[in-house]
Length: 471
Image 1 (spheres, rainbow, N blue to C red):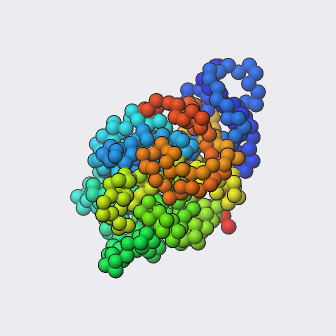
Image 2 (cartoon, rainbow, N blue to C red):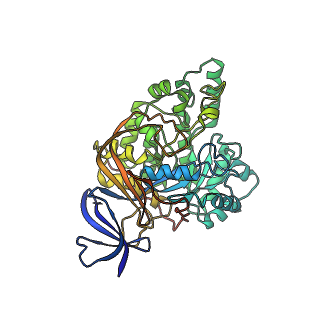
Image 3 (cartoon, rainbow, N blue to C red):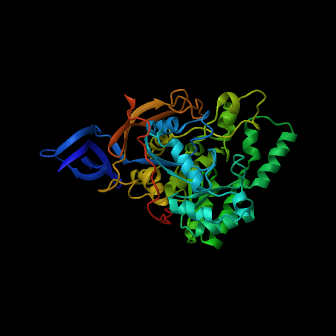
């Protein structure tokens, strides 16, 4: 047999150890592993140069804003930024596009608009809103699930005008609907009444300092929302997933729910591991404004521990860029009126490698889980994605563990040239991103495929993560 590609000198994880091998690729899939290429026929070769070679890394929480908000980001710029960050796969949210995705018709409209742009593969979240619940549109949930969406998103606080939040009883009904599909329901976990009350209180008091945003969207609001979500998951049998969890107390709540046998999972983001609201929101103000907000240094460490022990299941970014001139620091804007969101896909893998693995917070096997395996399993894409197995897609993230560099908010493929992580020094960087056996990004050459190379991937199966907590 003649193979299409060989990935030479790949240092692949085997538990917490590594082995160097040559990976054979045929028809975009992993076809074998050899230590000697003598007698092997193949077309192209890519040299991993002995660098750590992970199963393609996966960000399951992005807002690429396309179609409808392309002044912020396009699927081309967003997926290019993701590729430069070592991501081979993303999963885009249903809310930040026009029309928002709350049915198969809107989903197909979005897929048609972006199909000629992506440079890496992508899956989709499905949508259900308070408006849909009140209208009794239960069929849209099953139709989207049958089409291949990987999860459903509901907001407990307002998102965009075309994607309404749910009230508490509406969320309970959404849980019941989604539970019948077997896929997870992800919630933006902030209690609306508490956030609304304290934002208005602080505004009335005249506070416009950066930290005021985080203090108004207090940790108690996130805790109350997570507790309610766990309650509803237990009563309905829905698979609850807490997106972009910012608070250490959330990890403790999820861990306790797992130990009780509930099917609950959570993700956190690099900014919640690296930044605290007092420093970052004083320095960067609205450029560090996100929801849920940044928390404290104690929360940073508790979330790192959650990643280690399994109460935080994997990493994501909540990549949500905005236009600086009109949405971050437009005329008359302050901390309350600026839009909440930051970019993240280009720095996810480097931060987890540098501050997690290289600093000993995460083992190698856990690094693979939180960046690749766990999100792929959670969303029914494993072992097509997230695995280095014969028959899996030949997706690889190749990392130079010794490369030292500094995050520069201007040096990015994203249209958003701001980042509260700007100036942070890291050790470890993706140097090659390979999707289905094709080199997509090289740190010397940049993006090396044409727009449209990336493909839509439907959910392959229903699979739950193991409820494992390690102390």
